[in-house]
Length: 283
Ligand SMILES: O=C(O)CCC(=O)C(=O)O
Image (cartoon, rainbow, N blue to C red; front, top):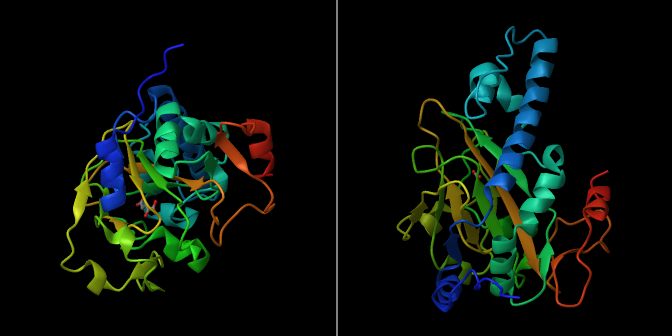
């Protein structure tokens, strides 16, 4: 049987080693993206039903497109549903996203090991003009703690709409994954995210990452990154970030309630974890 070529070239892998990030085009098939959009649209339905029941909104505007409905109907009330959704989207489409062949194979090349799934993922709708969802400079290991200092926990950031600097795409600092874990503090802005001392990012080379639907931005758990403000006027920046783990590495401070659970996504010799076992972890 003919297998397709590896998703990452030697040049890509060299860039990953040097810079701690990569843009992988056509990483996620269109049908998986559509199911993720439907999943998020279902969460929006629940939110708007709740706001209607509470008498906050009169017209649920069910015919509005996914790109605008949460912003147009819920508006500033959207903040009360949080800045990142995890349990709300723990559903088969998210399992399938982690297993998307080109993406998971690229992660296998980066990790040079079996591909293990990590339980930290989020759907993040960023509304126009919303401060709550502007994420300051940080390393994901700022959240995972010192336990993760020597681990490889690659993130794949996947937009569900086209993104650029005007609607809140990601920026990275190439090479920052070689700094080790730096100190983080809780920001004083509304999001209360962790942020690093601006001295580390001021003056650093920054790469802005516009992306198309289907692309995945891959970055190391030590790579400094942030998402910019959404200064556009109409559509929501919808994105999902997911994480993997190099087999055998410490997963960091946030892991499954059952620490013995292992989500095997690709392996030469272990059974791939079935969807039903993964779903059980979210009950
Ligand atoms: O989606 C965003 O706005 C920020 C994502 C992020 O910082 C992350 O995935 O670690």
